Length: 328
Image (tube, rainbow, N blue to C red; front, side, top):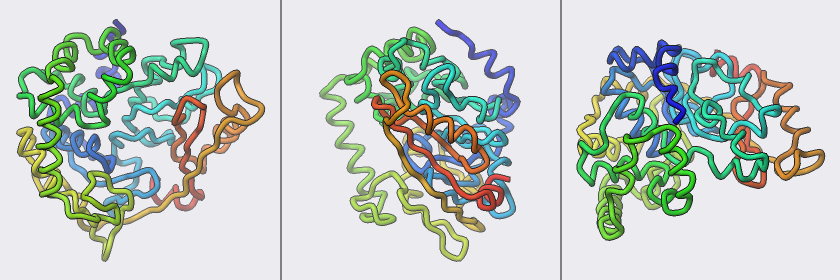
């Protein structure tokens, strides 16, 4: 087991502040994992001052991205601390690790996922299969077995943890063996198929009651905010009631003063693109040429992740003026 938990905490003052419930300012991903992570961290004194979905960033006016910790996103900016679990390296040689803040938590980098197998596709199958909120709970010494099954289900719902346990059991077991140990061994097996079916129905009904249909143009009341919108510097946030209800169910109560992301917001919009395998490429995985182009122009890059086993790279970028205004 690669037990580096204490080392990670000791080398990250922002994490120590959270553990001591002194908190910090955070920007959260606009999906269930981001909301759960925010609810957890606000119990430790954190203030939510931004929402991000990879193409848009709503940020408290008068602040920059560098002033906050980005939760549930890997931000490839050396002045921005972020916590995320995407694949960011083709190999030890061809990676973007130097573009990330040294105090960030890029989980697949920290645990050397790209070194698991000489075949990069096999290495990809070991990518972190859980959620950001689960890793934060692990760092903060929470005990999942002290929760009831409904609460555990809500935690496991983020990023489809229980589905991943069925589809990628080797990866889940690898992370239990190498990182989580007893924190996850029993909880991941504690909900049987029949219970899962009933809890899923309960969850969908709660979501239906809390999130209006066609919120932000998405239809059917989804948790994600695909399009972040502001009007007169007010954030459109139809998921707020849903977040409040989940917080109530978990005992991680929504405190309005700690969700300082509804008014006086500035909206930034970025560009995104993808590219797949072409030549020249590493054997079986991705375009080295394009990857090196991204590495050589970090001024315009916001994120770059390897998004599937074919080596497709998804990246977000903008002009230097917009990036300076957004991130500082």
